[in-house]
Length: 249
Ligand SMILES: NC(=O)c1ccc[n+]([C@@H]2O[C@H](COP(=O)([O-])OP(=O)(O)OC[C@H]3O[C@@H](n4cnc5c(N)ncnc54)[C@H](OP(=O)(O)O)[C@@H]3O)[C@@H](O)[C@H]2O)c1
Image 1 (cartoon, protein in one colour):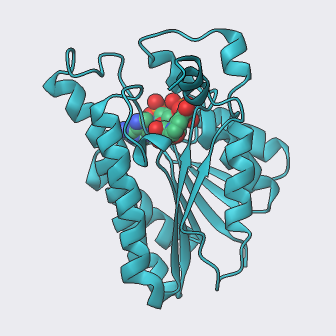
Image 2 (cartoon, helix red, strand yellow):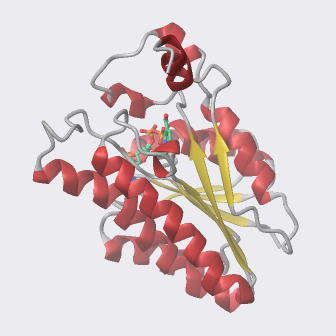
């Protein structure tokens, strides 16, 4: 039987690279994000390469929309082997001095609530089939507090890390495994929201979406008796370390 993967945030950046990589590994893909055209472009590339992909656009901050997709997966595809719980965003006005209630809602909803909705919705399907794997994209900001990503994003991603570990604690007896991936800087469209704009050279030295995809594929390739609980992945030329060295801290 073919393996099924649902990738959220699949229309760009890390999610796009993950979807293309998992298709190469033989997964049938369900692709979600808000922009249908971006998902359709990824699905087209997968199909051109001989793979299978389904475009399921949704705003994942809506629990009912999340449930609708999972219901469709259950009734139409019959199983779900892998959720890559990857959708997220950040805002430009992220520092406390600029943070608005709307900004807090946008960041917490898309990075934390949506991740919870997706995990909660797939668990019954995975329990019923006797196992499954969830891989969540948190961030280095989910492990360490720094001003770079802003307080709402940092708090939300810390929540995603805690959420992932809690899934293993409750669901390991059901054959369910949860991995939280914490990337440092990855060259994707989310960086366009940085208050300080980045040069092409800076972006080229970062981790690339394909680097995260290679890691996701490695995690997904582990045998069912192995759980990779948490992984940090960062560029060798780590700008925050280099900045600290330059300040001689
Ligand atoms: N790039 C980095 O440096 C970095 C570092 C650490 C962690 N991350 C995390 O990596 C994940 C992927 O981000 P990325 O870097 O690849 O940036 P990206 O290209 O902006 O990807 C984020 C994706 O999430 C989707 N999305 C956002 N809000 C959504 C919502 N409410 N419902 C459904 N989909 C939604 C977006 O699609 P639509 O706009 O079409 O909805 C987009 O495709 C995010 O969780 C991000 O926080 C990124």
